[in-house]
Structure formats: structure tokens, C-alpha cells
Image 1 (cartoon, rainbow, N blue to C red):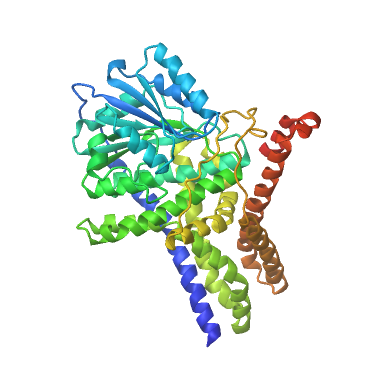
Image 2: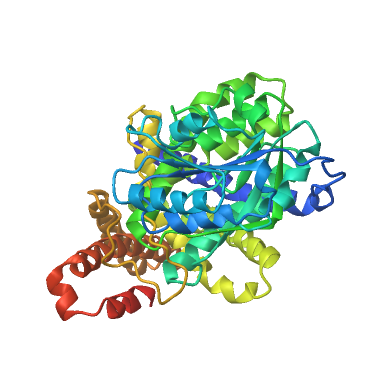
Length: 506
């Protein structure tokens, strides 16, 4: 009886993971089904409105100047543009940013430096504070890791000729996509979101979200939706859903690009993923009941559920990982052939679905898309490897554990020759790396167990889990060690940082 109860729990988790993975098929279907519904600019504004550009920064000494100067070079009438540098920094960034602002003021730029002595509300608090004195009818937001295109306002502002439009979002691209193996995989992961998911949701009439940067808001939409709030770690996702619940229309411009810098250091990447995963579950807890009770179309409610709860799949994946060995033992006791006709079809369909989803994103965005498909197996392994980190985030959200908003370290990395080792900021390693290592060892044993018992068909899937956990764990440890070495005076004397960086980019 206990054996069958255990298998029932295992299959419940497996099927739930399968449903979330299969949802990617539906996203691809919506993407191609609604190509004809792409936003079209029907008319331009007869008179350009005043725009405020908000630049929230926190300890960004390496990229602050790049962001500020690029924002001041945006092509828009100077008399209709004001810029706010919203600096919550506690390090040398304050000197860098203040000096840059003073230089630009001398050139006649309407730019204001606003520094808060406390970081209350984190990024959302900084944006809300700036909004009090923002002179623009529209608010453009750019994070520190972005380099705004000169024509971004000219290409977006006219969509607000429709008075029901509350926000226009552009697509992220990546300055350092080719920097390392890790950045190449991250870029593909993000492309799935920005090329397929955002497009599918928006163009099919479902809710999608402002991504915290590279978008323009109507100030009235922010205010009527309740403003920036700090009870979740994803203030952008939270405000987006509240605004759309109020009836504001959002527009996604897939072909308008905003270059950004993605994390080059895996612990910083994990911190970013933790924040996004936790924030989405916090937003789901906060807003899903209201969404489900509303009079919104059923299709909107269903997609909102999948969108806001998607990170639950990491927790389910972790549970599935732990249960794999006992499930194999149980199935052998009742006939291992059961595994082939039950587990394997689910795993194949889910794996193919994820691969198909990311393949479509690359095909739609790049001419050399075929060369990028080589990274898909490792992309899936990385997603599995993140399950420990992101499961912690999900559990913290479910049990209302409060944590600080941890920024992602940025180093102004754009080319392969750029280096981050030895610079001030670094990601933090924690005890979870031990769990990742243990899971890697656990799956090594599972592979051996499957081989001895001639369950060969399951070995490729077990390897994918093993590689994912080991990759995330070893890279986390390796980069921390390299960073510590590069930061020491002794290492700078005896070692070449360029050589260490070449190792990391390999």
C-alpha cells in the first residue's frame, strides 16, 4: 500500500512538472497564431509630451557613468526631457554618479541627482520617491545594466496616442552575450521570455509585465494602479498586474531593442534568479485571488495563473530529483518496464517541449539560430541546477520569510577582453552549494544504478540532472575562489588576471 502511495505522489509531481513544461508548447502556438495582431502605430501624437527618465542605481560604480551618459544622449527635445538619477548607493558610486551629473548639468542637460540616506522600499521606493518631483507626463525607466538606444523614445512615445495605453515595453538584447558559456546560455533563456512569451501574451490579449527597465509608463497609470509598492521583490511585476486589472492597456514591441549587460558571475546570476522567483510567487499570493475573482476573460485568468506560479516548477523539480531513486527501486519491484511506459514519455514530451520553445525563440530572433541550438542540452541542465536556489526562493515566498533586495553585481562587461575578476563586487556563495554538490553525487549513483539494472533509457535524463547540479555547484565555488585570488595583492603579483579570465570564458 505504501509503495503505491509513494508512486502516486511521485507521479503527481511528475505530471505537474509535465504540465508546466508543456505550457511552452501553448506559448509557441499563441506566438504564431497571433502574428497578425502585432501592435501597429495608427497615428502619431500631434505634440510630443514631457518625459522623465528615471535611473535607479545602487552601488553600480562600474556602469553608472555608462548609463547616465547614454540616457542623456537620447534623441528627444531637450525642453521636454528631464532625467532623475535615483542613487541609493553606499559606496564610491555616489562620487561617480554625482560628478557625472554635474558635468552634464554644465552642458545644459536637465538632470537631477537624488540620493536617499536609507534604502526603504529598495528600487520601488527609489522610483516612488523620484515620482514625487518628476515633471514628465510619461516615465521611462532604465536600470544600471542598460544602455538606452538614442531613438528609444521616438520609437515608443507615439503608441501613447491611444489614451488607454499605460505602458510600452521594449525587448532586451545583450551586450555581452558571447562573453562566456554562461552568458550564452542565459541569453537563450531570456530570449525565450522576451521573444516568445511576452509576444504571445501581449498580442493574444493576455496580461504581460513591465520588466523593471527599458519601458515607458504613463504616470497616470502608475498612480491609478496604486503606485510602486515594496511588499514583493518584483515591484515591476506587481505594478504591471495591478495596472492591467485597472483596465490599462500594455504594448510590447518585440522589434525595438534595448541593450543590457547580463551577469557574468554565476553567484550573481543565482541571486538574480532567486529574487525573480521569490518575487513572482509573492505577487501570485498577493494578486491571483483578485484576478481569479475578477470578470476578466477565462483565457486571461488561466495565463495569469501559469505566469505567476511558473516558478513553483523549480520546487517540484527538486522534489522530483529527490524521489527519482526510490521511484526506480519501487518500479523494479513491480516491474521496471513500467518506467519506460510511464516516466519516459512524460520526460520526453517535457524535454522536447522546452527545446522546441527555445529553438523557436532563436529562429525568430537570429539568422544564425542553428548554431545556437548546441547550447540547448546545457540550458536544460542549468535550469535543473538552479532548482535548489530557486526552490529556496519559492519556499521563502510561501512562508512569508522576508529578505533584502539583493542587487546583481555589474562590471561593465561588453567584450571578451573585458575582465571582472578583482573588481569590487562579487556574488555571494551560500550553504546551498553543498546541496547542489550532494545532488550531483546522488545522480551519479542513480546513473550507476540504472546501468546495473539495465534501465538504459533513463540514463540520458539522469545525466542531464547530474550535469546541471555539478555545473552550478562547481562554477559557484570556482568563481568565488578565482575572485578571491584575483583580489589579493599576492595574486596580482604572481598571476595574470587575463589568464584567469580566459579560463572562465572557455
